Image (cartoon, rainbow, N blue to C red; front, side, top):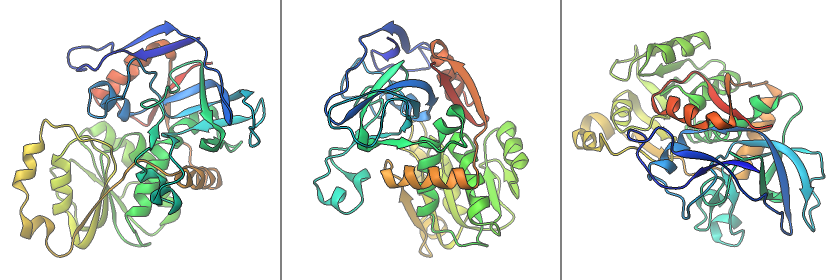
Amino acid sequence: MKAMLLKRICSLEENDTPLSLESVDEPVPGRGEILVQVTVCGVCRTELDEIEGRTPPPRLPVIPGHQVIGIVAQAGEGVARFATGDRVGIAWIYSSCGRCSFCAGGKENLCAEFRATGRDADGGYAEYVTVGEGYAFAIPPILSDAEAAPLLCAGAVGYRALRLAQLEDGHILGLTGFGASGHLVLKMAQACYPRSPVFVFARSEGERSHARDLGAAWTGSTEESPPEKLHSIIDTTPAWKPVVKALRNLRPGGRLVINGIRKEDKDKNVLLSLDYTEDLWMEKEIKSVANVERRDVMEFLELAARIPIKPDVREYSLDRANTALMELKRRAIRGAKVLRIA
């Protein structure tokens, strides 16, 4: 089968073709696993973190991709949930141990043996992928393949971030950064909290214009001060500077949710400028988002189908995965990017 392989960690500033298109053996499903013929796979900023070593794969080469939509091509021994021909999705959560206190307590995202699709196991930048049937998700018919793919990560992790923000209807929500996850959070916030205005902080005018088109009540750059302080802010940027700015824009008792696996190191010295009285005092809170649970994916897919939430999508062929990644690196973002595999 054809697949895009990551063979070595590298800087995208120095290498704009980090993945290579190659022919590899088609995977074989084991007991309890399904073989999925991939139709589309979303492109995520986390792939940049893998390639540049901020969250490196434990082995190389590896096939990236964790927003996978496809058709069950073969069911392994003992599979009961899915049959050949079913449409399924595969998200960031590839597996967890199922035995530890976190798994038993419904917090499998914190499991020490958490394995991520496209990092700890081969992912969806390929024609076929295998996964345990318990970690695959039925896709609502109302969503096309390309619309569904970004919901599995950008949507699901955005849903988790919105839950952690503890917003009440009528409270002001802030979004720092406005890419694939940010624009989906705006859509779900509008549906779940219709009286809550959403303020969007984004670096580029293109992103701010997109936010206004989708109904943001106010937009500005990260450096700008909003017309009033916010109750909750969700940060989806790869940088540290917006975190400091967001803390200063919170009301007393406000909560900042950092929605990202890693932050780039280039501006981490900005944290030294944190002022306790101005930035953290008055019981402001910071909450990080760690991975996703299967519950997040299932609940968000149901919500997305009911509202419905359909992301803005731009498609690329599999052999143009490097182009999509470099555009993401250079912040050429409007909605979500999806690879068309089959």
